[in-house]
Length: 228
Image 1: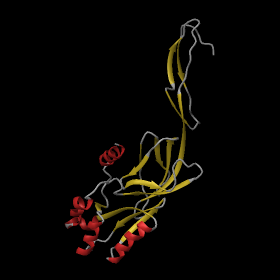
Image 2 (image 1 turned 90 degrees about the horizontal axis):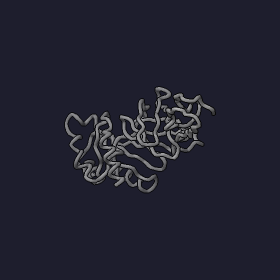
Image 3 (image 1 turned 90 degrees about the vertical axis):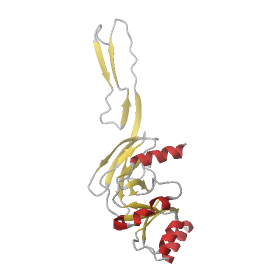
Image 4 (image 1 turned 180 degrees about the horizontal axis):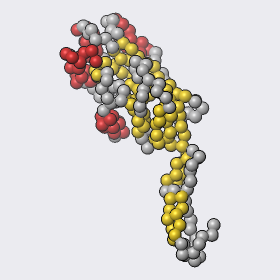
């Protein structure tokens, strides 16, 4: 393309209407007689996925945040937990809400599936030992009505059945959700006898407050530790 000599030009790559992201898409040059410009940009293909997200009690999630290099945006499509996530193909990202980390069936990168069902669950960001020792104090006093006890993530089948059998043996009330072959179990029983407490201690249960917000700093520190 011929340019007017001794003139300044702005080059801008237009990605409107295209499912791509352009980096270094703008350039400013000045033309001299005989000058040839080679203009290029970094182009990344984008994808999107629809997710329907609830909390552990089946209530729709109202807001999510997307973390990671692969994330572009997460936008709500309705008031009943439906979101569109826009992301860079072949890159990693995580979804979180004030209710906890979000998990879902399948992979967000599976473009063959129109909608993915998932849950945002509290306690998943916690790792390590002695969780009961550090958090069981939350079952005392005014906190009791708001307490929720996370037992952990168990493979559907023998592992999950063994835990559920132990809970049933003590008549411990619980709820759970199953996602991608994994069962996430939470104790909802607030009438904890000494025998029930002993069982939760043996399982190293993690006690949390139902309406507490996810500590993003804790999440990031744990992920950095897992990467080390």
